[in-house]
Length: 229
Image (cartoon, rainbow, N blue to C red; front, side, top):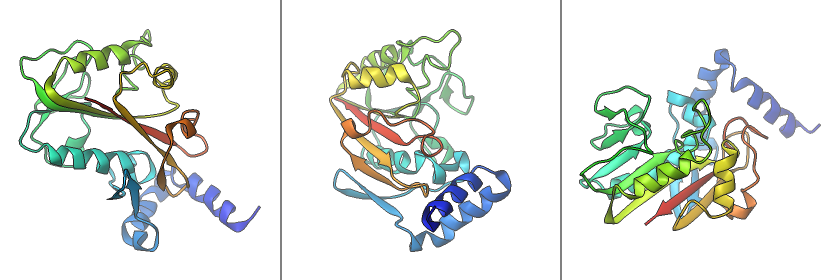
């Protein structure tokens, strides 16, 4: 086995052991200038997002957060709904948050497949949440993620937009609906993890559609960014 491959295996193993977790995070924070610390998506450059909460430096949040954050910034001052309480853990927010389970200030604890509002939103965003809808329930409801998307469409203003991200390989039924183009996405883009050091690159979705979750690296190895509207 060559040395780079051996180092990758050791790194991947240590990254999920608490005694080394903090040290590895500091490596990414202090020495990322020696590693590529940015990625390109749709012709734009983004810095990887490293944060201790949810260990973004070692999973798909490293790319999801900066992409969706830039979209949120473009809609600042407009009506925004976030499905899944994600961004409040990283930034001050002033938009509505819908999350069935997570308690928090101003978090609306309702089901995304059933939530209704008189307010119409200019932007609805959801980061790695749609794959849990229906899949994390007992009994499982395989079609509920699609029902949630259909419901979210009713909350958007005529010129509004829905932006979702989800990892491929986590929810098999959602993956199937994505491959069969049943999710009603206007546009879809994919990124794939290409190293144990959590480096990502944009790829054709057909090249990412069969990527597995937790293989070859822990957590997501490919994500979809889907747009409706």
